[in-house]
Image (cartoon, rainbow, N blue to C red; front, side, top):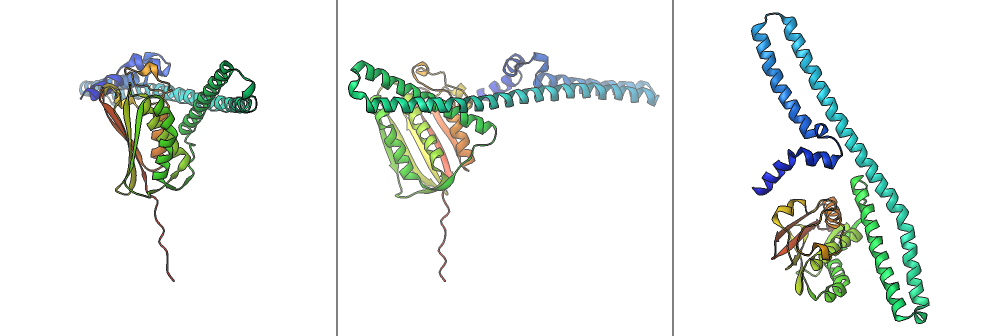
Length: 324
């Protein structure tokens, strides 16, 4: 009920809409629709009054013409506002895509040079110099992930996120993702537990993109546990879909923020927000990857108790062998 009230409030919060769209309050679609509704009501009432008091058809025609002109003007203003917002959004997406592409090459080169330096000249570096180089390497890795996320967001916004779908053993993929997160989890005193109730669970999906989704959900679960805790990953076959549940006993998500959790750049305002790295893009990308794969992503969360994130992807269709 609270979420419904909040959505209604946001829908008619003209100042907030104006700030988000970068237009005046009177140019927001909600304001213009309200005005149009009032004009229609007033016009219907006015025409009824005019037609009741005047027998002349010319007066009625003129009244209707004025109403049509007024409605056309308001409608045209709405269309122009929407077009301007759409153009601005397209320019923003194109800029992010171009900028990310331009940044990707130098960041990759920097990463390779640092790795080469650490491999070839590690014996000549002091302990402090090695620490600095490792910190630079970690920072370049973060920048690389951010650039990749921005590129994925741009592709999603443009409807160009391509998936290379093949048959993938989902249990193996889940185990690989868990294995890659073990060092991170151990450093934060988090126990990782995996359960796959079948030996082989084949799905038809993009292996690399699916790994991104798993890594994102598992790393989020680890990051949002304040102190010692446990992250459990369950994989099972549910009605023709491979279903994953990533469960944690972390800080959870406030109820009033749960509707926004998969929006771009959104980060929950919980107790350890300022102590975790993140851009607010991971769940947005994950949700789009899963939906484009033919599945869905959802979650359950209780603040100060923990969260359960689920997603499902279709199982691969087994080809029947035809015996001659």
